[in-house]
Amino acid sequence: MKEKISVACCQLALRVGEAEHNRALSAQAIRRAAQHGANVIVLPELVNSGYVLRDKAEARALAEAEDGPSLSLWRGLARELDVAIVAGFCERLLDGEVANSAALIDAQGVRAIYRKAHLWHEESTIFTAGDRPPPVIETRFGRLAVMICYDLEFPEWVRLPALAGAQLLCAPVNWPLAPRPQGERPAEMVKAQANASVNRLFIAVCDRCETERGVAWIGGSVIVDADGYPLTQSLAGEGMVLASMDIGAADDKHIGRHNHVHRDRRPMLY
Image (tube, rainbow, N blue to C red; front, side, top):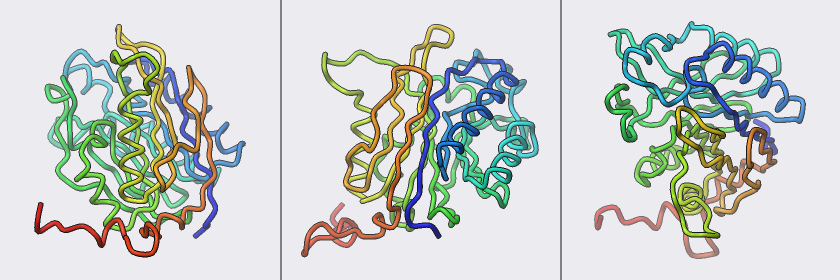
């Protein structure tokens, strides 16, 4: 396993319903990130379909199985470029339902598919919620975990992969823009920092940008270190945030001589 790795989050302006365009955009972003030395590349939530889906029928029409064109494209790129890719996609399930999913892919192929467990707003009318914890996968770039967007709002959920040994949590997101006090950063970014700090875990969040069917996005892509501090600056539009990290630092859960962020827990009191 490489101790020093480079991680990229590729913030894209996706188009709802335009799967071929979105795939081409993702391929360009992956190649650019690899050219800049990225080992782990994170893409937004629901890359193939776009996010603001009208209903379940539209989602079904855009959904793909594991052997569909999006994952096939990303498998080929991961193998060619020797990188790990985490990307969100609209997944077709065996029963005809659809899931808001994310795939972790490296040169070995599809290593894990995670289905979003905590559905936001109207997602619950379209997607079937996942019922399995975030996967933690040993890769040559470290132990990587995956979750999606609103999942990050639940500290108990983030704690699960942290306790399972994850060093880097990769989170495709689509954070909708909401009002906030002047001068304040988006609360979603602050929560990602808090989750990283209380678990001494690196977190890479990949957001999207521009607007889709009247919905604007925060554009809050950020890579956070194990102390909870951003290693990158957020973007105003399309682009990439890139950061290097000593991923092994996430294995040290100590805070000073006497405290340990996981051993100090007293769950019997909670």
